[in-house]
Amino acid sequence: MQCINRCEEQINLLYDEVEELRERLGLDPQEPINIEDLRHKKALHIYQDRALNRVLHKEVYVIIIIIIIIIVVLIQCMCSAPVKC
Image (cartoon, rainbow, N blue to C red):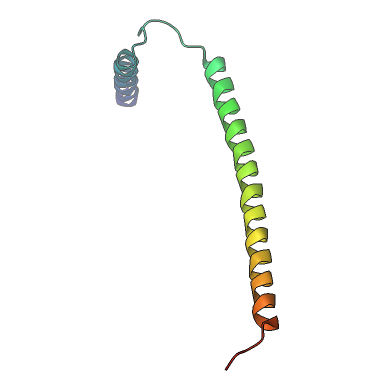
């Protein structure tokens, strides 16, 4: 019975916390929130982040290739330049 009472207390604390947070966000504490809509927005955000990550990864790869090419060209120029003493 004590366990049930503690669980009920925890649930009531969570309800109070949710109500406080909703008020801080300017939401009506009694208005239901569409959880499916929130899940869809979260999934969309994750998809967009992953797509951006792929694009940035490709850009970094291209920049690394360009830097390697520049280094190779500079080394070739240094090796083929006449040495003055």
